[in-house]
Amino acid sequence: MHITSLDHVILPVAGLANAAAPFERLGLSLTPAMKHGGAATENRALFVGNDATEFYVELLGVHDRALAASSGQDDLVTAIDGGSGLLRLMLRVDDLAGAAAGLEKAGLAAAPREVFRGDGTKICDVLAVEGAAAGCSISLIQYAASRSDRIAGHQAAGHFSHAFPLLRLDHLAAITPNLDAVTAFWVDTLGVPVFGEVSGRGMLIRQMKVGDAIFELIGPDSPESPVAGRPGGLISMTAFEVSDLDRAVALARERGFTLPDVAAGVLPGSRVSTISGDQLSGLSLQLIAFA
Image 1: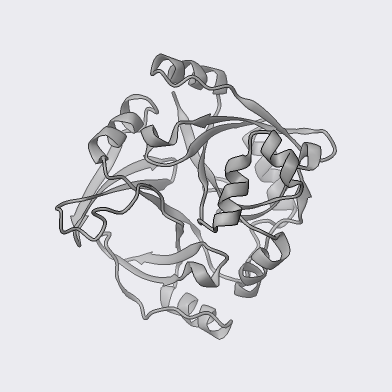
Image 2: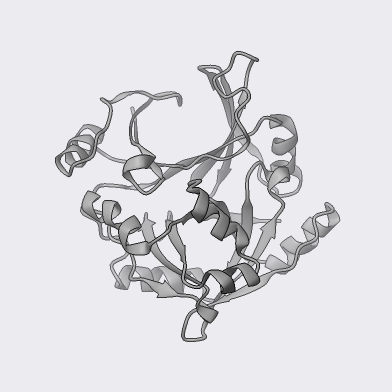
């Protein structure tokens, strides 16, 4: 199986306008609201990066709750009602049929579903993967359009034009109490090798590099670890690299956000500050720079 990128994450929201407002106040541009085929759901998206590093956060709401539940998206309804932060990580593949076959060999049979725009044109095929095996809820996605066509369309629409200096996604993370088993699934089934390992502050972090970004599998290094006993799953956080961290923090504060002073991060050579999720519709936004 070949996973080409960490494509996007899904942030369930109760209302698109209210959820998008703090992102826009920060200086980030989001796509216009779009209803999906059948009008069960609707979304807006925040794109970051360039033609080589594109990643996006999908703010996903329910337009018709009964239709969403009847179409197998009751997890989205539950997540919105519970306010649980990020719901799912989407991994891009170029051969979804081959990936499905690989999952079946691993005992994880699943059927892809098609996703359409409101006008009936196809967006993609999506294949959900059992969350326990991967350490969090993930899906594989293959788009109907080529990557070059999608990038060109996004650039033409100004999706990468922001008034806040996010450069690229650096990493996402999941808490994984059963770190070795989850790591083995990523390596043996998903075909993503371990890129590196970092320890400190009571945590053991396995770094799985996909494209230009890292997915961190975080486990406790002792029973006294701050992550020991925490439930497993996707952390509702995205870490974006910025070129001038101090300026980015100052800019966010000017726009009404509360951030801690810049401090050394867990990753070697990193400096970080974070906008907490309660200020950004349930998504913590870590700003990171490297020496």
